[in-house]
Image 1 (cartoon, rainbow, N blue to C red):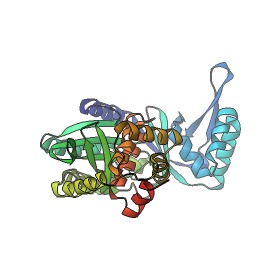
Image 2 (image 1 turned 120 degrees about the horizontal axis):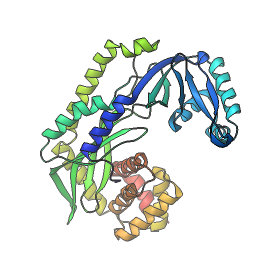
Image 3 (image 1 turned 180 degrees about the vertical axis):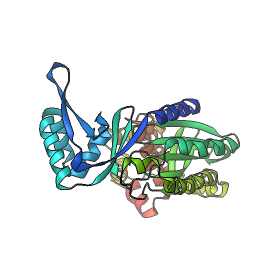
Image 4 (image 1 turned 90 degrees about the horizontal axis):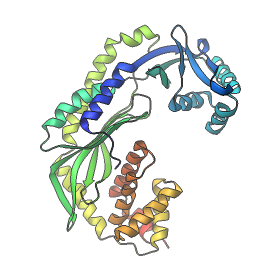
Length: 351
């Protein structure tokens, strides 16, 4: 797993970001994407929020605008880089052809998200407020990694008192991952985490709680900031997060997963290891360079079993291109714990 932030750094970043947030409800037909000149004749685009000014766009906001307008991502990026005037013309035209109220989320003067006006804002500081006290109550809890990316909040925690051996000397511990997105990139969730001490790899297991960011329709910016009903709804979600942080490290649940992992140790690769990795990579959806990394980790680990394959996948989280991708690889590895015998047979016997 990528190192990320310690708990003090995480709290400081969440607090700092909370001071920089501002949200608006805009009518797309009344707002515009505008072209501005930068140094050396270079052009870029900004988004106008009527009555509030213009905001530079972060990459995710570009992706969301392009998706809503139905502009293919490759063409959108080409216009952004080579013909920003054409991009602005396209976006503004589609916003008028298909008018709607949208929620604009900004951070420090930059537009970070372009969302539905039904998007229910569950803020990272709200998650932290309910999660940190509960985490502090867990015996010996360790925050092994955490981060706030442009897309999501992540808190990886482990409870060392709940542990077991998958095989002799190969110890794993129970933990969890708390996730949230303030910008439309995923639900509020609490998932299980299997933490392997030998190499500090994490395998993300199934969600014990998941709540999408769907709320009531908000018509204007004033209502956005005075939404008492939303705050009451949020309270119920946050209380559920609190409860699930405790539940995710249930010892009975951990023992059931441990038994499954122990079963993977005896499931050996009987075909071609290279082909086994190829079939596995297609199953979990990895890039070519990640597939090569999985094969390399499998060989270096010297464990040609289903358990060895699982750990070869989660090992890629150490060198992932981003923290977001690292967690996706943890989830890909974790999904293999519950893979059916038929699917494992197809991988292990690949030739």
